[in-house]
Image (cartoon, rainbow, N blue to C red):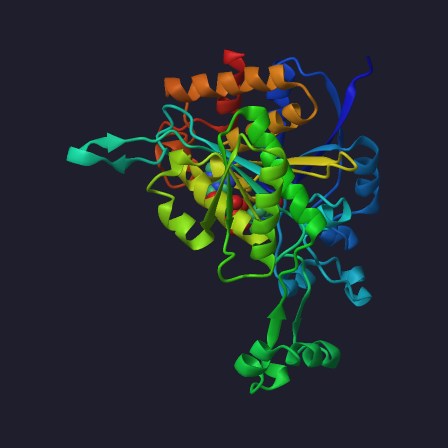
Length: 398
Ligand code: NAI
Ligand code: MG
């Protein structure tokens, strides 16, 4: 059998550091692959005026499976200022390569597991009856629609006349906004389509069935956002009734869900939501299991098979130049495990997860975040493990 080729997209800052660590762990676990590096991120914006060059798109089209570190994004003015002088005349506008990647490849399914590791000092704890301390075992998987909704990019400030006129035909718009000058109005749309709403719902139910979760919770706000959340809830009910009778469908509102986050997080299994509420719910749950050092994600398109696996965190530029890297590579390593699941290498993924669990349970090797230190170069001298030492500890368990 020929070896697989994985597109490695290191990106910026700590992206490269954690990606190297994940590849080291994959190799130690016996995953055989060739890695080709794709250019993406700030460096390519500055040098070429394009943070997501066509050659990278071609590589992804060819090989389909990507491990992604993180990129740096900056506001428009800062982006222009750092552009190479000879490109400044060209009217280039910076846009985030992550968003471009998502849109170009239609990565409509985003999956973010949040499962607590036994012994992680960052796990959420709460007070029980009689002053007992409870540490609930969190195991929620958030399915977030990744291409539509509030992040769909259809928005205007001072909307064009046709848009404004169309909005004025809506009685609520006339009533609530009709007296404001057009120039003072900004509009961001929240568009849901039946096709992609159905896809994220089905992906959530399928995952629940495959991994034995007893419930799927739709986390939206159908009582207020009647058209989009309402459609999603209705579709969820139909899909559950038709094809997933053994799985319970729960319905929570995003605001209440955030309030309940600390009350009963252990009750939730699979959670499914639109783009923005999925983003919020997944960050909320990630906070219960250790935060950015532990938050992994997968984004994929079931039609083309293109899948991008990346930690939720960004490029943390202030840590990128430390002589010894201090950041936690576990989120990236977990993301690599999600890649292995996706390409049917579950046994290797299970082996890696077991090793990570052992290192955390043992508690001898902990990165600065796990020791609740402020990230500074001196954390190593104060007993925190470096990024590489964490990688070494996981590899030793393998
Ligand atoms: P960030 O996630 O890079 O860092 C925020 C803070 O979280 C860090 O200062 C650090 O204290 C902690 N942190 C992050 N990753 C960690 C790790 N692996 N181990 C331990 N601690 C960790 O977010 P920030 O500072 O808001 O953004 C920095 C840059 O990253 C920006 O340019 C932003 O646009 C970009 N970004 C990129 C993302 C991506 O590539 N998917 C996602 C989020 C931000
Ligand atoms: Mg987020």
